[in-house]
Length: 121
Image (tube, rainbow, N blue to C red; front, side, top):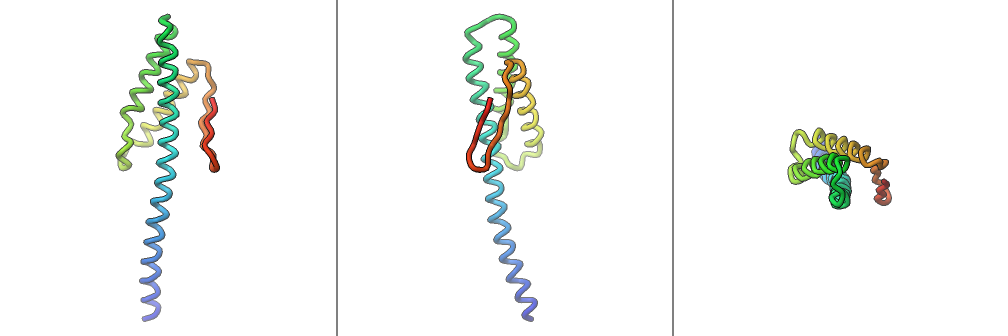
């Protein structure tokens, strides 16, 4: 009887602790993705504004790539954590960001530190 009661109490406590830990982990992971996507969007919008002043063919290719990146970010499903292609879309955005950085001759390095955020370009 004591074994059964102890098992039930342990199961209930473990389930409760697991839910709290899962929520915390999800919130942290979501914040990291949000920070990364926000950085990409700010980067793309800034460069888009800067390059609009110049209308040569080289810059039009860069602007098209930036438009593509901005469009991908705007279509990203922020509100749906159950979206089955979330990781695939995130990888596509990361790839497009690297492509844009290459076109702009900018070294891309996105890092989130454990103590504080640090973005380096």
